[in-house]
Image (cartoon, rainbow over all chains, first blue to last red; front, side, top):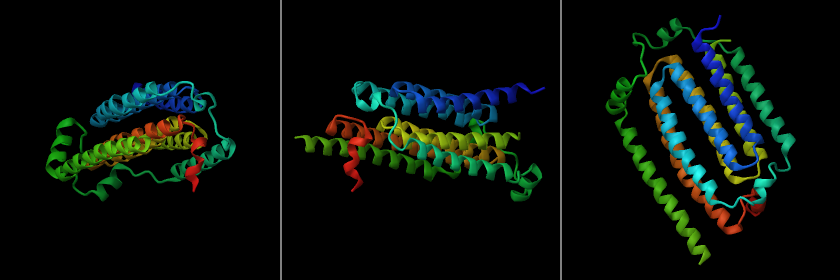
Length: 177
Length: 100
């Protein structure tokens, strides 16, 4: 008898996979975006089951809430009669699938052969380390106390991204005019 | 199947699906979304190992990767809009002149 947690884990894993497959076969980019959103929400469910609640919240907030809303907005801006909307696949369909399948099989073989570390092994790697919990409070404390510099650097990165986006749009305008 | 192995296999499958999408789809926006799927697969493996090793540094790293992904989309979408404004299509076949 499987526990409810494992059952949910398998359910979310299957949902994430189904979303990925739907992304490949859906014709309209909006459906692709919705499939990707479904896949991301399933991954957030998996993170919640693992107990990494902070990451699950960020997955929904940043990925689904910010990135995908942006993406959906851009899809609505663009022309629906675009030829790439009607014809899904390029010419190199079979070789591409073969390459991806070879990659997946070789990686999966490596995972299935790999040696799984037990709790005793981990204690040897991190001697005297207490079991960390992924609740909000220890995460925030670790973030602000140890990784504050990285946190500040991300704001610089985001600023650079904003400036670059404005520069790209301006360059395009100059080209038009 | 062990839970770690299941999650790693799922992450491999998501990465391979995203790679297939990037290679076979014609629409530039869909290719971008497939890259997001690849990134999600990699993040899943990162979270799995972070949870397995019970260190908070992994969770912090995942947060930083989220920020990088947001910045990446912030740059990539204007580039796609610019491309579609120049050739009036998102079909990557129309941009074969970029091959050099």
